[in-house]
Amino acid sequence: MSGVMISTAVKCDILDISKRFVSRNETRQGTFRQTKPVYLDALQNVSFKIAKGKFVSVVGPSGCGKSTLLRIIAGLEKPTTGQVLIDEKIVEGPEKDKGFIFQAVGLYPWRNTIQNVEFFLELRGIPKAERRKIALEKLDLVGLLEFANYSPVQLSGGMQQRVAIARALSIEPSILLMDEPFGALDALSREKAQQDLLNVLSKDQERSVLFVTHSIDEAVYLSDTVVVFTPRPGRIKEMLSIDPGRGRTGEKGIRTEAKFSGYCADVRSCLVEDQGI
Image (cartoon, rainbow, N blue to C red; front, side, top):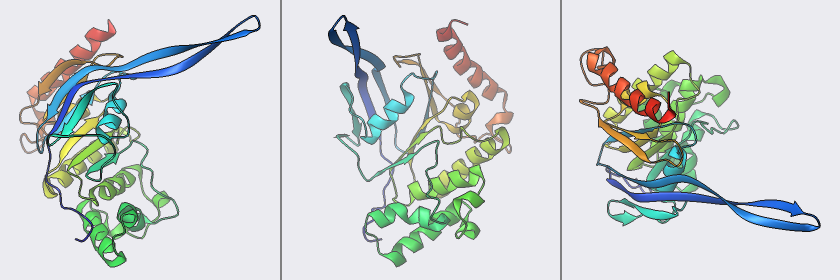
């Protein structure tokens, strides 16, 4: 495919990442205005690794810097200290081999399904016939080929997220960064979306994935490793390896196993401890 590089999974090293945001607080004393910097520490000394082809989830309370970490890895935000390496290369800005999927799917309402999937390819100047072929392949991968000409408003929330996944995969990213992508779905739709994602990853080329979620169940079900963050500033409280991971146990998956509840309890215990409950 001209213009599109077929990527294999990468390893990602997050090394001692801290992030401090600075704003200005203006106060008035009589006729004088005084401006003082206000500091907010979002992340503090965060270090962990994502091995090639592994699915890692990050869970933690709201405001603990999970999304900020994703943006730093994507090159959309600069860390205050520390660095991110992808296959030993320091991330210094946005790069073409990263796929970013947000909770808000961001589909363009004036484009139909296949045109939305083609969007990033179009930006890269891929010829029309070639980008149409790629988009059809990715829609087939996520099970939406028959909805190629539907508008976003005609699709359910789960289907819209699958379109967003197809769009992210169209550029053949070596790492997928996913920020609460299923957070807006109802419980049953969310479980189906989780299984759909695992199915896509099993059929598609090998990808490394970093997945941010507030759902303990979701993190345990999807992941090879779950990273638990403390309240702000986000630090690593615990890292749990999920064996065998990715819902791969038994005919009905890991949710039917007793150890699934055990993993969920371990993650919940870490979170509750920091909340002082």
